[in-house]
Image (spheres, rainbow, N blue to C red):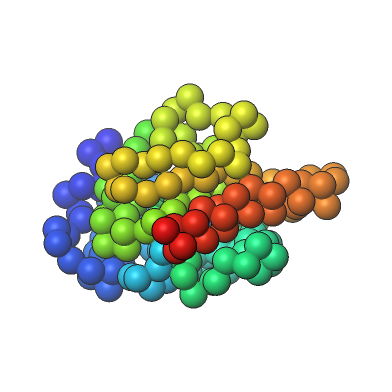
Amino acid sequence: MAGAQEYVPAGTGLPELRRAVQDCQGCGLYRNATQAVFGEGRESARVMVIGEQPGEKEDRQGRPFVGPAGRMLDRALVDVGIDRTEVYVTNATKHFKFSRERGKRRIHQKPSRTEVRACRPWLEAELRVVRPDLVICLGATAAQGLLRPSFRITQERGAVLELPEHDARVVATIHPSAILRAEDRETMYQGFVADLRVAAGVLRSLQAG
Ligand code: URA
Ligand code: SF4
């Protein structure tokens, strides 16, 4: 797998990157998806939220976090007082990976570590252009892809970490989809909000300093 690098135009802004990602064949995931789903938000956003991959809805609409997980994220950002217009949302991989159930329904499958690595140049390009002060990783795929393969959400969620090569802080938490699947949604949601509150605190202290 060659990876996305050769498809990523150098030195361009988000509109060019968003156009170019539609031609990416850096891994096999482009074959079955409807389209690539690039990140969304202002180039001046101070926060970058990284999810796993586009879901079913995102694949159809071509926009990240427009489905149920996105609504959960939006609600939590409001709860902790992070201004949504300061947030750029994207994913570790830009194409939807799925298997078909009974020939029809598309069931989301986790991208492999190789696919995440193949897609990393797009994320790097987004980081270079947006230059966020703070990155929020949603779930293990994002955190392991960005930080290190041994990263454990259960042990390291809610901690303030560093991304020295991008001069940014990082906070990792659970994926909002995990809340939607959980039996005790309220407890999971409160934990999610507690982690995001740490992120909101980092932003406030950066603003004050
Ligand atoms: N889940 C993600 O990780 N990303 C999306 O864009 C939607 C759902
Ligand atoms: Fe390219 Fe990423 Fe899509 Fe793979 S998932 S084809 S690397 S954009």
